[in-house]
Every structure is written in structure tokens, then in C-alpha cells.
Length: 537
Image (cartoon, rainbow, N blue to C red):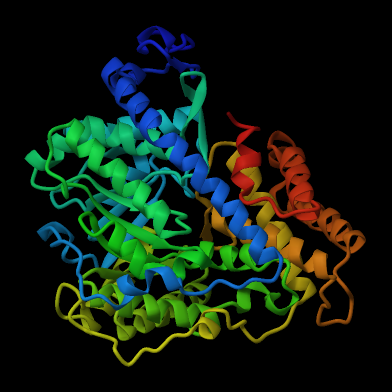
């Protein structure tokens, strides 16, 4: 089909596709696949919307002073002796997983990186432009049809899949994000159902033929009821394709504060399909701020001081290990976002030392594997886990010594709030949003590979500091005039750093406006990507 022709002609009745068609888009947007998406929407969208409304109601309680806690009504689940279903052979050893967006070059490089698993990310590492969404699905379809190899037109470099590629897992968008380009009965379908549904429909049976399976990561869950919805989606999808229940396997990111109090319950709701949980540290920090945003007792120090080895982050990572291993599931560690700096050997060595220390903590605590964002970090993390975890995993290592209370999960890190930290939030937050608006979800900034979670922390922390006029280390209060002054100064610095041409040809005006609006709003928006999506859809 020619480019710039809408896909509406290929859609079944009552499914509207408004996105433009590029080369081979019709391979993804088949009438059968769209009909499958329509059925997912009709069966599950009402419940999805109800659960999002419950999130908002729960947040009102937190805003009025309530604190997250373990649920009394699910005590029997927490105290039961149940376990999750058996885990497939190709997921037994996940000691190093690499994550990244779904563009073709990244997919090839990640699969060839030497990591055990590649998480292809339609969520925080991908800006959900229509092209990114559909072409990402094409790239994953081509991986399973042995046609992923390509030559980069700009560089002439050949990219080809190696002999021992990583196991592939896919992360769809969270329940909150719509896909504006596909409507069912006049209503936009959830991005989560699009990303899951297209990958599963086109590839599930082929995956099984190739000795693997449809494996997923599930983001942003805030309750066991949201996990139950995913389980219902999985059960229906498997039945629709004639596959046994339990064929799908998923890992849940525990990356929201409410979810940390429901790890047992989340595992229980997905027990036929779940293989583990992951300590999604960056989003977890964002969620901590967002959940407790109107409670002065929980104002955090600079985000650089909110580290995994202390306070609420330490408590939740240990609790995750204890619960997952008790239930026969894996407990995956968090992200190492460093980007190796080949031009500065001294800085590079210091960065790798930080990665090594972080992974030694994880392996020593009992995590079964970890995440990296760059291929050069795979051997660093692999060496640590090979040294400290001789078996394929550590599920048999029970952490009965770990006792974590509500107080532990809410303990604030010691530290200070500084003007440097405020400036860093501004500089990184705006630059990430600007790149996102240009279609990039994984953005290298100051030797770190950032995704949406960093921008979320940045703007939510500024919002909270403004709300309470938090005092900085130099004695100044964080006020709107100070924030706006620093915003102007930091943008002048960014312009000087990247040059007038790059700055003026980018989308900085929109990014600055959005960042300013979100940071100074009367209420904290749940996700910046909802507002930002209006600028790219």
C-alpha cells in the first residue's frame, strides 16, 4: 500500500484506524488482528476504566492523609502456602536482562548483546508515535520470521541476528495510556491492549513452534485488581487462539508504592501466568512522590540521594525478594542506566564501579537477575552474577530473616535539597520531554540512558517542593519565581551546550511549556505522558 493512505479500508466494521500507513503496515493491521483487538476492547475496557477511577479515588484518600498499608481483606492470601505455576526452561536463567525501545537497530543489538533476556519496550523507552508503535510490531514479527537482518542506509552497516539471541519479552504500555489511532465503536482502545494484542496475535503460535513462548513485562500496576484484569485478558487471549491457559508468562514490575503492599496478591492473581517481579526503581521513586505528594512528612531530598541501599527503596527490594522466592517466582533487580564513556577512561571506570557495586548488592541480597540499558554493561553485570550466583537463579534462597513493616516501606531517605538538584531536575526533565516529542523514548543525557521515569521524578519532585515551599540547603525556599528563574537559566545553558541550530530545530518551546505547566499546576497530573501524547498523536 502507498504511504499516506489511512488504514480504515482494511479495518473490520466498527474499528476505525486513523493512523497513516507506511510500508508493510498492512502486515500488522490485518482485519483479523484488528478484530482481535476489538474483542479485547469490548470485553475489558469497561473494567480498565473502572480501575483507573479507583486509582483516582484511592489517591484522594492519600491526599487527605491516609497512608498505604497492607490490606486486611487479603490477609489469607498473604498467609497461604500457594506457589506460582512452573516456569519455562528458557526463563530459568535471567541473570542479565537488557531493555530498550523497539526500533530495528536496537532490537538486533539487544538480542545480540550477550544478555539472557531482551525486554522490547513499547512503554517508557518508546515515544508512542503511530510509526513507533506499528514499526515496532513489524520488527518483532520479523524477528520470529527470520527476516530481521538489514543494512543501515545512512552508515552502510549490516545488522544481523547472531546464533544465540536473547530470550524476548515485550512490555506493553500501562493501563492508563490510550492509542488514539485505533478506535473501537468510536472509543480509543487502550495502548496496553494494542501492544499486547498485536504481538500475541501475530506471534504466539510461532513462538511455541520455536521452543519459546509469549513472554511479557507488565508495567505500572497499582493493585492486585489491576493484575486480575491482565490475567483475564491472558485467559481470553489464549482461549481465542486455542492455546492452553498458562502459555503466556509475565513478569510484573513493582514500580508503584501501592503495589509494594500487594506483592503477594499480585502474584496470586496471576499465579498461572507470572514468573516473577522486578524492582522498577525509577518509577517507584516517582510513585512514592506522587502517592504522598500532599504529605509534608514525605518530601524527599535530591533524587541523586534517593539510593537503593537505604530507606524505603532498601525495604521494598528486600520484601520483593522474600515474597517472590516464597512463592516460587523470580525477584529481578533494577536498572543500571549508565552509558560507558570511552572518551574519559577515569569517568568510565568510576561509572562501571558504581554499576558493579549496585549489582553486587542485588546478587548478594538474593535477586535472580538484573537490568542494564547499554550493551557494554552486559559483561559487567554478568561477571557479578556469575561470581555471586553460580546457579541459574536463587529462588531456593529464602529470606525469612527479612521483616518489613509499613513504616519501613515509607521511610524517607536522609539528605538535603539543593539548588543543584533543582537545576538537574529542570535540565534533564525538559531535555527528555523534548526528545520524546521528537519520537525518542530512550534518551542519552549526561552519561545516563534516561526514559520517561526520570522526567516523571523530575517534574513531580519540583511540584512537591513548590507545594510545600521546601527549603534548600542554601536557605532559600522553592517558590514559583525561583523555579521560573532557574528554568530560564538552565534552558540558556542547554542552548549553549547543544548549539543554536539543534536547539531551534528541536521542540524545546513545547517541552518547556509542558514542563512548566506540569510543575506548577494546582494538582499533580498522574502521568506526563498523557499530556505529552496530545502533542505527538
